[in-house]
Image (cartoon, rainbow, N blue to C red; front, side, top):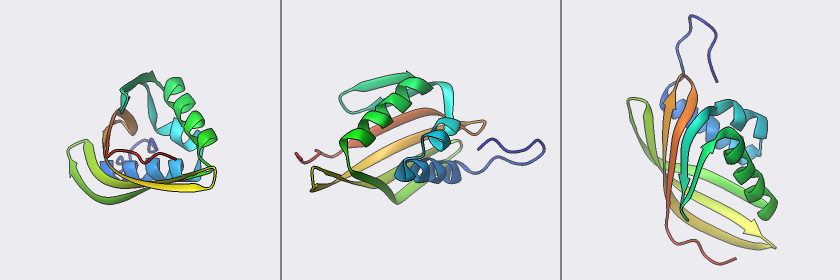
Length: 126
């Protein structure tokens, strides 16, 4: 999502929406284009990833596990280069459905995600 020379970058919210949309479509190329080469990506576990390849491998693993998965923003706060969003994550595995609430934080620099942090409510067993 790096703009043409002379044009303004999209807002952090627009970048986060594009990132989530790419995830929902399972569009690996679009996701990869939004990730900085070196980043801080932390999910519960804790799982800390620091490269685009590591993040994409995690998403590929997620997509292979879940027949369907979707993230929807419920509310957000945008400040400077950062978006903190309350999200609803829904997924199905082996025909069973689960929904979990979470907060994700996206920090953007030059059109690329440089920091991702997720805080999940307890995820139901599938």
